[in-house]
Amino acid sequence: MLDVMRIREDFPILAQEVNGHPLVYLDNAATTQKPRQVIEALVRYYETTNANIHRGIHTLAVRATEQYEATRDAVATHIGAINASDVVFTRNTTESINLVARAWGDEHVGEGDEIVLSLMEHHSNIVPWQLLARRKGAVLRYINVTDEGELDLDHARALIGPRTKIVSVVHMSNVLGTINPVAEIAAMARAHGAVTLVDGAQSAPHLPIDVSTLGCDFFAFSAHKMLGPTGVGVLWAKPGLLEAMQPFLGGGDMISVVRPEASTWADVPHKFEAGTPNIADVIAFSAALDYLKALGMTNVREHEKQITAAAIDALMAVEGIRVHGPLDVEKRGGAVSFTVDGIHPHDISTIVDQYGVAIRAGHHCAQLLMRRLEVPATNRASFYIYNHTGEVEALIDALDHAFRIFHRAESRTAVR
Ligand code: 7TS
Image 1: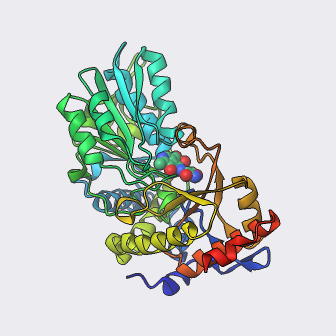
Image 2: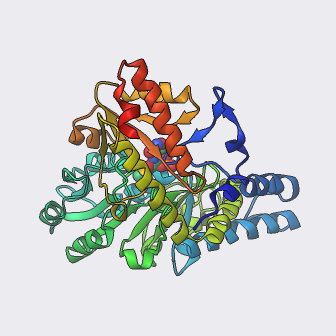
């Protein structure tokens, strides 16, 4: 189990008050806070190492290159990848998905081909495919979401067929928390010769990940949602796939030989890392991975199951609150969306913020899912390693204030 109070000491930002109340940060699905170890790694890099990588032969350049490549090794280990060379650094999950839609999609998707997504995707796993479909005359298909907030696997089985070229689905929903059976879906795709991309933006931070058993071809995630700095994303590809793909962006660092009429490419993964990358933040990401490793991802998952169960129980005990998504914590992670009868999510989140509680309200970049849920927006509390059940109570208390403002008296008594 995690020692949450000990962990909190590593996060300077959590020690503050917001609007006169202790900060209760429950917006971890948007981005997580950073431990001192990550902040110090960033400062240390600029104070001792700063240099451009892969080109200089002076001492600092060599040191920076080694640290940058060491992070690639750490990422590979974190997700169970066999080769570090199958790990590409991008800016974020969004860029990783765009890379695949361009570099793999332009080559393999043609007119009338089908791209299978789901109704619970984040916009970053929809729009790149819409752009590809428009470029190529391909067709988008969406796997339905059941009333329980899970992917409809019968529908998936019916949609994925001989015309399917790629299936791209989210591993853990940023709205419903649902953990999708991506290995099963990847097997459906494979049976028809299609490849699978898994959007791991919400799973890599919260679950033990082993890409070799997921059975997918591409896996994308962002450092900033797992204690790391902003501006660093990861794309993992199954061995051999990157070699067969054309570059996404052209420029320095990604070439072998440049001639007036044409160029040849550097080996993978450098072929996909044009220009000076985000060296400092990649290197600091190592400290985040070390931090998670020391905690153990199984412990991270267990902690989140506990706090998510506590949050769901507490929210469901309040009359007029509806929790969206699976209620069984074995089937879900710690992004908990809820709506309150008669009070708009934006009003709720503005009021609870007055009590120091940071939650998110809106469509969470998942407008197709909002339509499926038949709501314009939801409130979302999302948890991480430094949250404790006292903060769930703080959320419920803050909600109580919102209810009072909207002249509803029942909440407090209903909760207890
Ligand atoms: N996919 C999922 C499932 C996500 O939750 C997000 C970000 C992304 C992709 C995009 O990640 P990015 O790092 O490229 O921006 N989700 C959220 C969120 O739920 N609130 O803010 C960002």
